[in-house]
Length: 411
Image 1: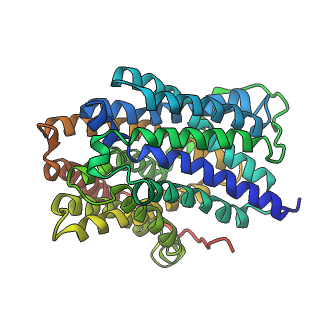
Image 2: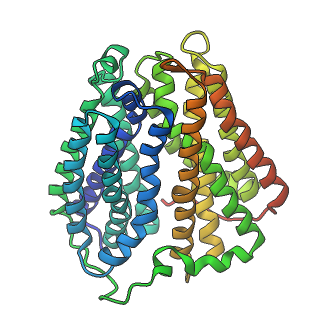
């Protein structure tokens, strides 16, 4: 099947909108909840943990509906239409009690769309192994665009705007984008279900077909480390924007896009590290980058040590690419063709489901413990994920045996 330029353009636009929507409200939600709805750390943690519940439920949804009965592009349209309504409801919520059911419902309909856009792209590309990366990068560009708009065009994250609850407008912006994607999805190439109504099996939805891989010591160590490292990861997603805003760093949301920019750049270094140093060193660099990032956050400030905060944000490329992207490559090589998809599904459930669910809960509890009036003792807060990430790295280094995983970037 040849992929026409029109199809490629449509898939790029789909990815751009998909991640523009997520990046447009998810980054600043903690700041909004703390300042506009007077939410505490545990409440903010509960709001962010809806992502994990969505990740846990998404495989069931996809397995029961998308894989058996509905065209993926039509289901994508329906889900984003529902999402537009829920995002608008989040913008209008007067307190956390009204906000939480909306964000919970939204994550239940949004998280399945991540699998749907990937499925649509893979089904429509003639050579996914070389073409998908060029399509997926538009999702990162969408996330970056949302942050730049919020900070540098609309200035919704300035101290004065935050005090005036301007961050409510991020939900409205994303509601409009979700509505646009709902309509646009109907123009995407038809992507019918592939299983022909085959019987749904719970073990397939959650990747349990790959559970036998845990008998391999290296895979078990990696699997456990992946869950553990997602605990400090949750601190960044949940509190980084709130932290930068409390320190009155100018344009905090725009500055956080440095993380996505570095994500694209550091991706280019993965083949060199994997081929020269092996998977163990590459994964360790990713884990240790989390420790370095949080230490920079603990020591930095909005004045003479602002550079530490910016370097900490820019380390996102190392943190994410060297551990999570390299980890996906490791799983791909370890699982083989027969259970490749099941293995990726199992690790996604473990990390974005279990690991981050624990992390969001812990981040909320620790942030509440270090609340000082309406602000926080951030140096103490960031010390926790820094030490935890270092401990995970030490245990991983002592228990994981190096392997050679050959990889090259798609052309």
